[in-house]
Image (tube, helix red, strand yellow):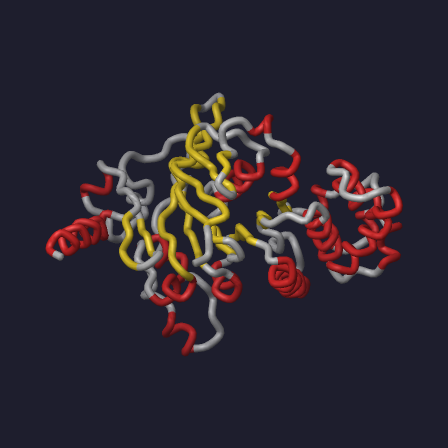
Length: 331
């Protein structure tokens, strides 16, 4: 049985602003197994990037637990040891802003090697060449600067930089959204090959559900800082349960009638996404939900397990937990 490499329990990250408290991440719980790719999907402002930045140590969590390889890493990020920082890396959304324009590609790739004392001066030259080969870039690119290469090539350099420390867990924060469509497939294929070759575990953050169908092991949906639904990819697309999940899936563009038949019944989006400063009471989705009940505006539902590795946060399925408990008691 594959072990869990990362476990997140009731994670919260709040920001204080002049308008009030922004609950960017509000009680998120999930886990990632070693060697898998978890796709974290949500609209802009759902909190998925905040989850990423909290996991890698850019943000200190307001509350909750983060366990990586059995070690609690969520309490004091300032005391993270170098071996832990080497083992968890991130690839940012926009390589144009995440790469230092005043450093050559060689200098960019050398930096993590020097910081973590991975190679000697002679070994660093060989390591840089190996990293460029790994992401399928010519060796002479080490002498170029970020502004002299294309967006896809910049992202390949960003991937190489993340892999320089030989990590086991990599957060991919929308790594293809800033790229041309023609380049996106090349980056995705590269990431998949590297995952197999290096036995990497990915948290892939995106707003593109159709992409997750082809690459993710499991899919998790976020809305206004909370998880809505988590399931294995095949189960997720065949049996979406949360109204918000169904809304997202029904809006995926298709090119054939056969594909249209596989989508859930069309659910029209109504209303606007509430401000994270003023999240409505009860279920945060109830103002837009076509299945909304009076209970939804009063009580925030918890996540319940409705099938094997399939959990959902919705009052429509709260009875599933009760039924499961009853059947176990009868046995």
